[in-house]
Image (cartoon, rainbow, N blue to C red; front, side):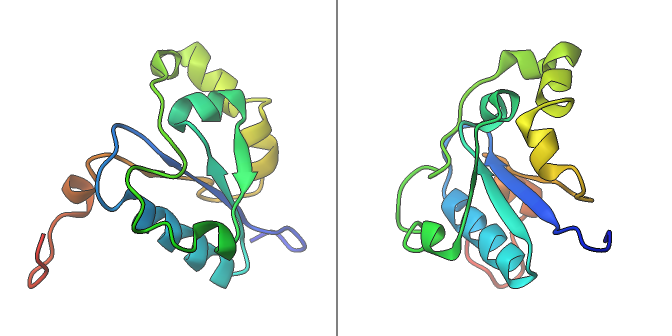
Length: 126
């Protein structure tokens, strides 16, 4: 970590709504805050990353979200993100770049296929 620089991370959700997305968002926010990091939510998935639609998230922002359906950050399709020009707009000279400039792992993505990525654990009912 760079001396005198606060670690900042952002979380976004992608794909369609799936069970566990809000729980994952809540866990990222609470763990980040516990570490003393600034945590941001990217609204509307990759489209929000391109548009710079980030908002700071605090513990109160994620209280009571686990029982809500969908994802509180919302998701949106962003076909331009599949092209190099879209990636460049999202990452170079953007609001996201400015906010997350000194982070080692600046963006955490919670995909729709969260169970495929994390996978079921022994002794845990899915």
